[in-house]
Structures are given as structure tokens and as C-alpha cells.
Amino acid sequence: MGFATDAIHVGQEPDPATGAIVAPIYQTSTYVQEELGKNKGYDYARTAHPNRRALERTVAKLEGGSAAFVFTSGMAAIDSVFRLLRPGDHAIISEAVYGGVIRLTTQFLVQWGLEFSFVDTSSPESVERAIKPTTKMIYIETPTNPTMRVTDIAAIARIASARNATLVVDNTFLSPYFQSPIALGAHIVVHSMTKYLNGHSDAVGGSVILTRPADAEKIYFLQRSTGAGLAPMDCFLVSRGIKTLAVRMKQHDANGRAVARFLEDHPRVKSVLYPGLPSHPQHDVAVRQQRGFGAMISFDVVTMENARTVLNHLKICSLAESLGGVETLISHPATMTHASVPAEVRQRIGITDGLIRISVGIEDVEDLINDLDQALRKI
Ligand SMILES: Cc1ncc(COP(=O)(O)O)c(C=O)c1O
Image (cartoon, rainbow, N blue to C red; front, top):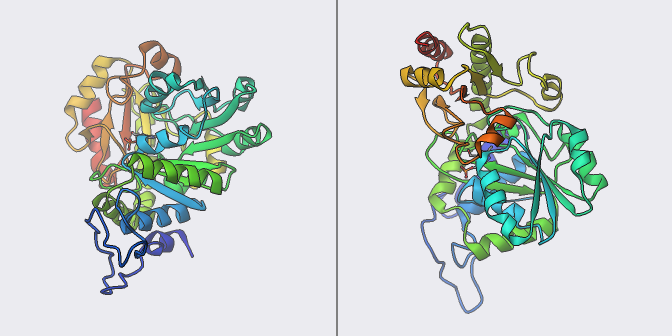
């Protein structure tokens, strides 16, 4: 079946008890047993429930994995993946990764004897150089948040395979509609489902999609042991959102391309980071491995003051954390999403004080362009 058909039907069969086209929200903590040791497949909602199972089947199918687990947030999903490592293991991580991953690894997980190297994974040679005998995982985000650097997934998959390391790809920015990391050689895909998969800015969730039964067994063990599995109502919301993923992503992509072109020509904008523009340093890799460019764009207006002026004068674009919703969200990474990243690291990876990140929504694109134009003219 095609992507849109799978997004609407896989895991979303009509309710067998009533025929309801949309499965009910199983808002229950426990399940009555028919007799001792006999139940209908569920016993306690921390362990599993029908809405979670349904959503897990959908995301596994869309990413081409053999199993998936959904968590209370993207960070809970990512944390479970790092717990596949053992004390003494080393992992290589994209240096311009989402700030929460830098915080989790450098401020917390290092306490348990794990070692992390932050590397520009858009350069396979740099990844190769960072490999140690203890390297067990390579964790990449492509494109990166918010610097939009693109990593060649297949090239890094070859390095990972040669060293027996697990390749993990955060596919949040493009969604499975535009990028299939598993087909390119990744072993594990993670998502903040809070973003495009849900798409309506009304739920927080994460997912881990796996290809190897041994990894799946460990992640499921963790999910039911720690209790970070996604609750029924949130699973329902994300499942509903995924049904329109294909049409939303097409519109996000069209609007993203138009806004990127507009910003690139604007006299108040110093530079634009968008893999769809030929000026982007990894444009050729993006063309090769992506089926679209999406709607995440970062642009530089040189100073914090200029950024403040633009952000304070927007009328349609909303100043907010997060991304991937139908509405356009705009943010200032240095003081918002990446505020927990030390200033010298921000400078090194290109998160300047004048950098603004926009998650282009699916409103009428002329309205978005007019809004950005009037705010930029206030500089
Ligand atoms: C690329 C990326 N990965 C992971 C996360 C973390 O997801 P969550 O906020 O759902 O925990 C985010 C959040 O912004 C993100 O942008």
C-alpha cells in the first residue's frame, strides 16, 4: 500500500466490539482477568494498552521497522535508546543536535560511565576519526535543530556497520513522509511525535522504531519497567494526527520552499539555512536522501536586538517553543530551545544570537510572507 493509505489504516482497524471506525480511547488503568492467568491480551495500562499498540503498529509501518514503542515524550524515547549502552561504552552524537539531548547526555548519562563525543556528522571523515574501540552507537539528527546541517545517513551507516555500532537517527524534522533512515541503513529511528507526526500542537510524545528483535526486547522491558509509555488519550491524538501526515507534509514542504526563497532575497536577512536551497552546503545530500525539504528554516538577522524586533512584531507567526504543527511557530534558539547549551558550544555550532528558527505551518503562504516582511522591515 502507499504511504497515505498505511498512515490511515495500519493499526487503525474498526473496533471489533462495536464497528466504530475510530477505535475508542481505552481510558482504564487495569483489565479484568477472565480467570487466574487468563486475560484478553492486556492486564495493566503501564505495560500495554490498545491505543498504544495501535499507534506503535502505525509508526513501525511508516518507518519500515519491525517494532516500535511510544513514550511520553521524544526525550523519554531518546533516553530509552541511550540505555541500550553499558558502562564504558562510547557514543558519537551530531554536535548540533537538539539541546535536550546535549543536556541529557553531558549532565546526566555521563554519571553512569558512558562517554559521548560531539562531532560534525555531516562530515563522514570526522565521524571515522572519532571512532574508538569502545564506540557502540552513532546518534545523528538530520537535518539538525536548528542549524539544518544534513548528514549522509548511508555513509554513516557504512561506518557504523564496519565497527558493529548501532546507528540511531532522529527523524523528527522530516518525518517518514520525506525520509526513511532504516532504508538507508539505520538500526533505530527516534521521533519527537510532539512535532510533525501529531502535527496539531496538542500532545507530547516520542517513539522508538527498531529493526532488531534484541533491541526491541530491551526497549519494551524498559518501557514497562519505567512506566514511560504513552497514555491512551495522547496515543489517540497522535494516531488521529498521523492520518493526515501525507497531506500536511506536502503543504508544509510547498510553504517551506516559498518562505525560504523569500527570506533568501530579503535585504534584512544575512543568511538562510534550508536544505532545499542550492546555497545550502549539503543540498546535494538532501536531494539524494530526502523526498522533500520540509518546513524547518533558520535565518540570521545578525544581532539579538534585530531578532527581538522581528519576533516582537509578528502577527500570524507565533513566538513559541516546538515545531511541526499546522500553525507557524517561530523561536529564538539561543534563548529558547538551546538555552541549556553552553554559550561557547552554541557559538561553535552556529547558534548565533541573531539566529531565528521558523517552523512554517500550512496557513496561506502569502499571509506568512507578508507577516515576516512587515516584521523584518521594523529592523
Ligand atoms: C529534533 C528533536 N528531537 C527530539 C526532541 C525532544 O522531543 P520532546 O520535546 O517531545 O521530548 C525535540 C524537541 O524539540 C526535537 O526538536
